[in-house]
Length: 195
Image (tube, rainbow, N blue to C red):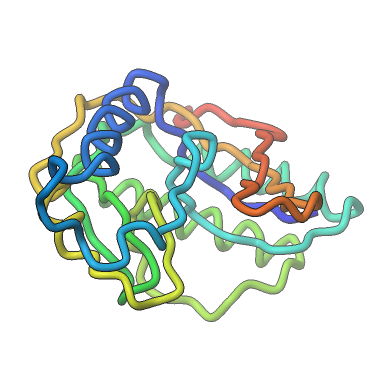
């Protein structure tokens, strides 16, 4: 099963972001120029809006008890922290995302601990790199001008909330072969932060 550790935003934060994204997706009024490649963006569904801390890829069931115990310890060692969805960014022409503000030092520490928990449970992890908190909104295969979307979302400031748990999420990839079909996400377990 494909697994990742994540911070899941509360429904209120998702609702705020949805309204902002709907405004961006609807684009300029009829008769005005739209962003080049606007229609080629594949927008993620709300169910996919999460802050991935550590992507583990395929994980066998025999590893789960040890992984659960290690993630529980990682959560226990990390105090709750404030977070809000903030601003926008991109990875080249491939992905449009919104970022985070607030307790980013603690969020990065939680990401480090989740990554270490997976490694110690025997899961081969990708090469380590500095964690960039982001929530992916849309993907492209290139040829899409993301700058109008980036500018439209640059000033977005969500309402702060308190991150109180670490979630282990299963990603169920589409199997129906239907164009535009989205992955399904299922929280397998969640652990409260702090002592």
